[in-house]
Image 1 (cartoon, helix red, strand yellow):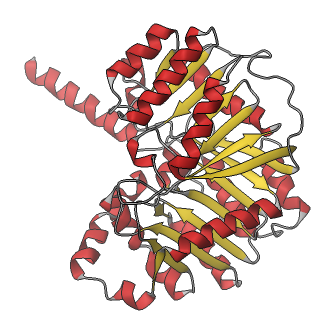
Image 2 (cartoon, rainbow, N blue to C red):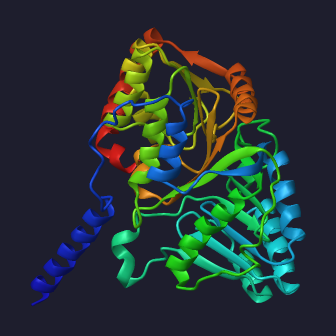
Image 3 (cartoon, rainbow, N blue to C red):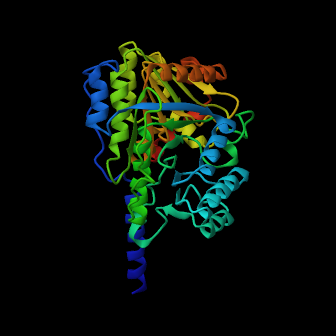
Length: 420
């Protein structure tokens, strides 16, 4: 009897493991035909209608570079909240900046402002319990995304990687930053990372709010609506934008398709700031096709300073043919490079939580802001080129002649690429 029970338990554990190592949806296999360029009106129609949500005008998006520029306006917005605060993040660890956010959120809750915080269960594992206790005591509504329960054990590999803060339904923040000491400072040394975050005003903020509420509803079953969350929003600028999201439970392929549409439509240039670059076979082919038709492809990715050697090895294994085809790949020197930005033809800029890998495209809940504005794209291109100045270009010869131990390690990471 004991043997039968142990066998059943082992079988169940293996089934759960297998379910967690699959995305749960059919993988996109078909290459997209190239029907138009990014400058063609059909490109915007495709992204705004085929994949949605619609593109809205009247926005103002401002880049914030590194912690010294990122955290003060986020905290100031929370402290000024009058009607609501919604906050979703993957990384929330211990440290001074985590305490500052806990204090600011708690103060607003005590003042009677509804404050909703959604933390990923895995990403917040290093968070001090005292922060949670402080916020809960103050009245902050805190939930953990996919905290283990018997009914969701097959979904533990699906994490929310989204980074969203919306205050009073009027101002939003999104990008790559986590709430941890590594993101403070100004990327001045290896202990302080290079990252970008974005301040958003205008109608696109309502789409950011809806993206947060999508996961809040999944976790709590509660619908947040009304003027406190969705007020009338006046135009704040001239930029067109859309908040784009994906989730394995509601269309995990949509983010990948958005990236594929953009790469396929690229006519002149494709600049990628990529913290984790592990393209699958189809994405790799689309990049090769872009190079073949004369698109300049440039990537900035982590160099010596990285938070995961496994991903770095898996990434480098894919570089050979790209380098031979003319791609420019640069390794950032001063510190860990955590940016997630795609600039296409200096017309479209996509920023947010999405990495250029299978985990973001198929396993995680992600959210990106797409901005369709030439002036904004030119500014982000200048930021990209400033990062290039702090990076070392990798040549094909240097990649080909890398040490044998690196090549062996890269081969060993091959079986893990579906999870990276």
